[in-house]
Length: 85
Figure 1 (spheres, rainbow, N blue to C red):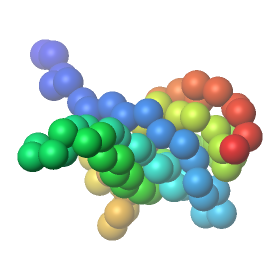
Figure 2 (cartoon, rainbow, N blue to C red):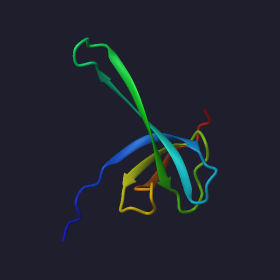
Figure 3 (cartoon, one colour):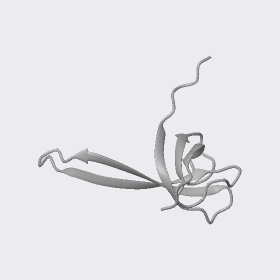
Figure 4 (tube, rainbow, N blue to C red):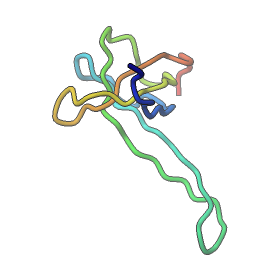
């Protein structure tokens, strides 16, 4: 039985104070529907980080998962880069 495809996002870790949880900011850019100007929007997700390996500034890929707590519905798939912001 094939599992359904899950959403993935790439973002920057902006908070790592919690245990096994990081806050990831995902930025997106799109053209304004009427004026055509590029608009930037960002959203913050609480993400499960089982081994506490992510630090502030790391670029990570996250994937949707079942609810793990009241606000956590995403988990870290991989750390893409460990650059510091």
